[in-house]
Amino acid sequence: MNPGTLSFLALFTTAAVSVSAPARAAEPVHCTVILDVDTGVVIHRQGGCDQAFYPQSTFKLPLAMMGYDKGILVDDHNPRWEYQAKFNRSERERKATDPTIWEKDSIVWYSQEITRRLGKQAFADYVRSFDYGNRDVAGGPGGTDGLTESWLSSSLKISPDQQVSFLRRFITGKLPISAKAVTMTQAIVPTFAAGDGWTVHGKTGAGWLRDAKGKPDRNRPLGWFVGWAEKGGKKVVFARMLLDNKRHTDQPISFTVRDGLIADLPKLASGRPN
Image 1 (cartoon, rainbow, N blue to C red):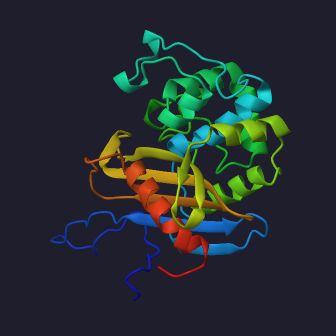
Image 2: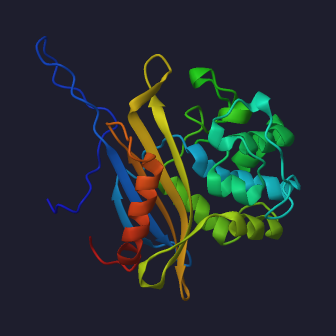
Image 3: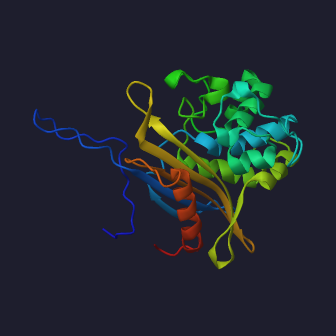
């Protein structure tokens, strides 16, 4: 096998049934998929790209679309909401936040304030009309609330293949939202310079799978980086996902996934092999 080729790996594997054979550790799941925006042609696809997982903070992209379309969000710096102690978030999130800060610093409580203002019905209607992943915003796993947590290791799941399909419909104006919602969402998504003249726009997401008791399994971290990239007249959408089988302590797994994709994208988007 070509060493650069990622295998299509099963999410969980077990050893052959035997009283003396312990279960093997679950294998990592990798995927990188890149589509041409204009044609929808797959430029690059490797790994378990049809396997669905929690979107985590990549869901801030559709949330921004909903917020701008509904008028809850106004522009790139409004509304600016103050942190409240009742949000009970980490020190990193205890600050006043506007739409740009929200996307850049991945502020969870700001997402939850948007969905509270949307309400359960409008929130569910947007997810369905977007045909986003499994469209399940009921919540429940781990005691999560559907309105404010369904995308956070809960009921809502999406595959990398579905991520790029959704993003292509967003970029090409095929989602049922206003032109302003499209333009403003694009304006607040973090931007990164890549090699060979490429500019990357994307959102990270990180979390963990849940164990049999519904608790986060720190040995099964999940990392995402999804978005679009452009160079001259060429534009692509991408998703990279890693479900690992070991703890990540040096930096969030999503940063590892993001940095790898930014480094790899110029070559992959040009259709050159690894």
